Length: 229
Length: 132
Image (cartoon, rainbow over all chains, first blue to last red; front, side, top):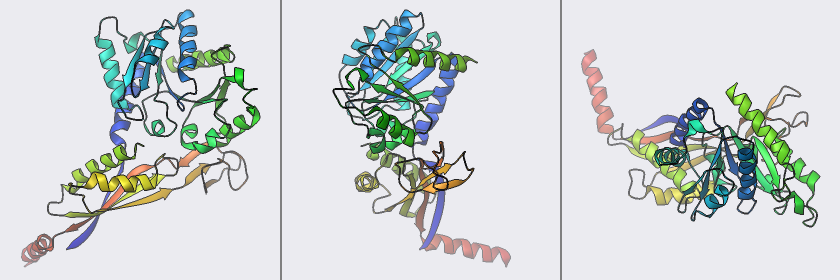
């Protein structure tokens, strides 16, 4: 017998990465700013996104959302109440969204009557499955990955789940209206996020009071303008 | 939790490569996994056995090489590797370093295969014959 070493040097998630690169090209051609929202279950992604969609729609922007969950279309119905179209992606047990699912849902959505076409959008939000681990490995072709952290979760979340926070382009702290009763240490949370992702833009928000949403929306508009050059 | 699908991708890629070497047996598969890759080595090893049963890779060893975080420090201009994942600070000057050079790798580096001798012997004979 002869032993031989064969070099492969290939990315394990090469297929997803290639599909994500194709999606990124599609988003750019369509001129749509695409964001991937990631957090633990219960951080308030849906409430945050609902208010974001409502504010954007009221301002005349065309925004839509794809929302991932293992089961139920509850979140899509909640998001659609904002006035923006929303579509549920059920992963049936899979703990993250991947580029293939997004591509398929975008195609299906464009194909139905009254559906959503990427070219008609200013913003597409992808609300990932609530999970701070697995979604960080799967590129969805997004321009901006947003990591969310609520004041109820503990200031050390970024240290416990560094991968996700390190791969994020922006961070949002949610539920700041209840920060005080929760004994939330704001300085420590900001410090921890910054240790893991130095220089990241952090928004402090409340979907209940609307706090911090102006800065968040101004950021979105700036990013979209930058995208369209 | 997604380690099984990661391992399945490895099995598919390695099976495809191994098919180019008929009669060869895959002895081991070497991965490079960054400490920021969100993948747990023990889970990979656990899933590896499950995912390789009944495939040409059954019995092959999985070798996982961890890749530490590498940072470029804008403040002092040096590149360095750091221990752990809790703070992106330059070990030389202590400043936060935003530029990640490595640590997110999730790659198949190489595979070790064992080929039957008859084939290589055949090639040797062929070569000698050509020279003669």
